[in-house]
Length: 458
Ligand code: FAD
Image (cartoon, rainbow, N blue to C red):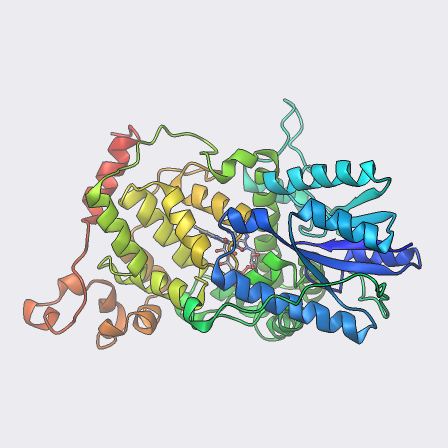
């Protein structure tokens, strides 16, 4: 009989342990993707990510066809569909990458039970989605099941030896009798951010190769410079598993140097947040560490949040970043940190509102990375300095000193040279009137005071 390989957040043919294991038996396989109703219903099917997903599935199907196979796509309840396909193919085993949200755990358990009831086996493979699987590293002592602080986690993570990346299979045989639906198509352009990247393993590998050749060496020096755009932009490929994080670590280390070290450290952040969410699935919604916040509610804060979403807060760096998000479905990490601090601390609005907006637009929108980074920025997560408030003017002088990033995304201010672009309110009234750009929606010092007061710090 055949084996089924259920693809989830691992949409690639290279470095794919479940596929390798299934083919290792010399059997035919059914490469399966299920468009899961539950994922759609939970609001994770945002158009930008659906477009990227459609690209990934098309590319996966093309890669399988080159090898004599094809991708089988079904939709509905994932457990019912996997069981139906396993029955059609008379498969004894189903292979799956382990994944770490509460939903993914529940899916795995339901699948295991349903398959066993039919006399089939579920085989779950670790270290496909992350480099080091959640739960492998624990602080020891006191029975703690995960690391709550990054630095000690990273010290241990660095010492792990990730497996060697696996090559893609040469041939894949898929039983003819298993039927497939059509591959999903991209949502219409009107629903999408105009500047979305192309999805898929082929595009991801091209980006990875270009990054290792042309970006990695400067990464340590330039990754925070907003105007330089000097990060890898691999995040959506990593989110969908079109590029393997394990392979990215290997290849960066082969190249070596300070840039490679800094880049590998960022990939460790990804694993770190996954192990927090795996141990505390409720942190996707509830405060990881409560600070007894009583977030503002009512029309005033709703108006301010609407301005934040629209990129019209009157703080050029905040607005630039929010407009980059709308246009590209992606935002530079420095921007993400700033706009999240601005929403949760300066405006003192519930971080979940901001996290939801991010998930509606981010092409790399990821439950572990998004929710845990939002909690970090709101001071309810794993930040060891939970009460610092980022100031958009100070951040602008540091990370966009000549104003390039602001002028790129806020064209109304493109006539302002240098760092003056960060403080349009300081312009002489006559000059200020020439720029059709909003006044600040909040006074930064007032916002910071309100936050510190609410947290009981003064
Ligand atoms: P690079 O700088 O090239 O880093 C390489 C890879 O390391 C990234 O692709 C990513 O996989 C990983 N990485 C880097 N920084 C982080 C981090 N802080 N946490 C976890 N992984 C990291 N990242 C997402 O992938 N999805 C999200 O939904 C997401 N939401 C975020 C929300 C907020 C409020 C903040 C502050 C950060 C968020 N991040 C998220 C983390 C980070 O901003 C992005 O991973 C990064 O900007 C992606 O760009 P890049 O691929 O060029 O990163």
